Image 1 (cartoon, rainbow, N blue to C red):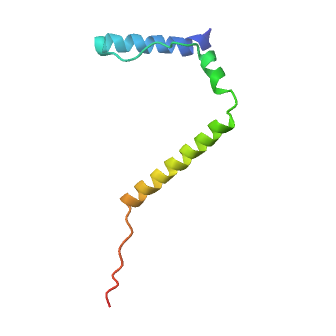
Image 2 (image 1 turned 60 degrees about the horizontal axis):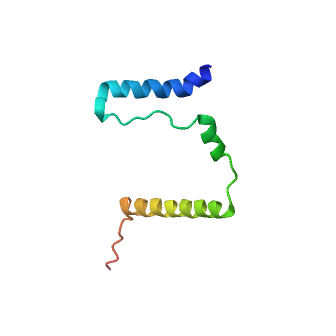
Amino acid sequence: MWMWFGTYGLSAVSVAVEHCFAGRKARSKYIKKPINEQQGKDDSEMTEEEIKKQRELFVAKLKIMQSNYELSHPKPEKNLEV
């Protein structure tokens, strides 16, 4: 029972508190699907295409991080005047 309250009770309390304070501007929503159902989808094995796609995304993110670092930390220019 306490596990149930931990997931669903926390969601219900947080939604209620935000709706009390923010009124119509509240954005939080109650959990739509059971937690156990969401975990089942994450545990399935990935296909080769999904693995390849995730690797490509990871490499692209690393390249973006590298270019951002190079832009924010420029190398000092050397004077070659003789």
